[in-house]
Length: 392
Image (cartoon, rainbow, N blue to C red; front, side, top):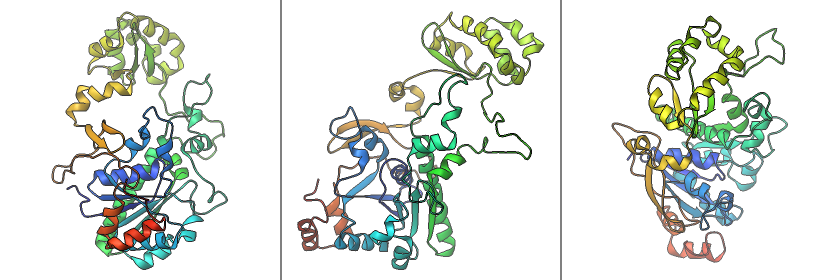
């Protein structure tokens, strides 16, 4: 089920961006086989209040089968070559110098399967002085200026969670599906190259503009300023956005300050940004009369807003439930849990319901058998330490 039903994906990546890109493909109906080294994806061992399995791993790796293969061994390479021969997509996040050493470079695998869509995610691209440097989300945030635009001008730079990783995951799914469409028309596989560096800059396309003659220190902050932002209330905080004239007028009316809307000094978003020091104290004083959720109800559709909530509130939020965004999942080690279901809906090819992230090596024997390996070969691989010591 799903628009990518029948597409087989080999996920050789780890951490967040590569694995979640493959998860998005699985959400579309692709069969995703996660191939892990004997030590497993590093994300499994990330700090977590869940003792049995990393919370991050569970959330990033839904809808996959899992196999352990030691790619450094000759038998492991043989296994992966057989996998690649009949698969549609391979995704990895190795540094550019690694795949040739493992016999997993594009040239080698394209010779085995010319229709293969080979997607490599790197930190900085596959050319240039930084090509073999390991890339990490927060490092790229810091390098490319993302963190300097967070917070207020009088606050230190802020590093966010993992926005570069998650946008890179979207680019992986986007690039792979585009390459699959190209293959449908031409019969050709190809190499899709994505980097965290390109991702971080793509996220800032609106700021990444330097007009001829502009000084280096021009303000490139895209935020509108003024009243837009988070404000305290009687209980809790609320985010307000009142940039257009009718939103601004509605805000002033509903908080009991209609005179602000009539003041020509505040009649444009630019003027309000310039005079935020005059406006914000008045708005915030008015907001202290009610709670954040009360204001949310009062503003309704007339003022874009939302009470600031925690992620825990989303599990039972009526809108989230109405959209079917929470799934009841299970994992062999973690047991039952609730997690994200699927970000996309299709009228003609709705994917199957989500299922939980795999345990390390959980499907090793079944996957090998599906690619034609005999019970004896599987036992020999296990004896040689090429695959999991036992099915987990």
